[in-house]
Length: 171
Image (tube, rainbow, N blue to C red; front, top):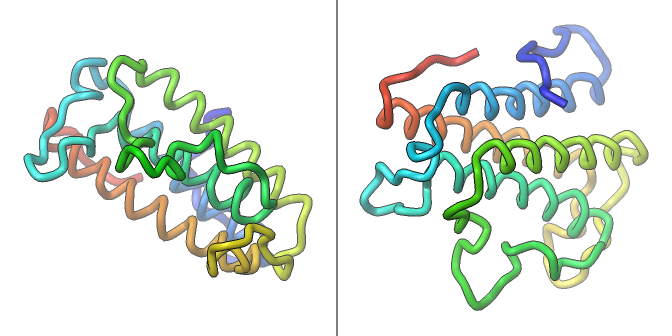
């Protein structure tokens, strides 16, 4: 599914622009991982954040997509999502031994599911997950949040990658 690294049109409808900006940030995830040796994908570089590895971040973003679009918006079961595991903090970032290529494929598959959900709903539709106030947000709010969330973690990937091997750049 590799998304192209292109900005959405400067003049377009709201859906084209919001999904376009989110897809651009999603595409930058794979780009930040290109050419990275497997051992580096799992190597921590921030002493106070040992789970913030390239692989851990990709996994976290996959499960964040699942959380917001499938669980909070559609009200689907949260049991499969490690973000809801109360026994292990940051369980979604614990991916030792899981190949980066698999994590990237799973992330892109999850993004495709998210885009299908977005395409099938109005931006004014609200989430259906009880128990979380943000679960009652509109799809528009969720999309804006996901642009922010994904871009923030792309920045983390940029920093981690530079610390690993000096690779840097945006877009």
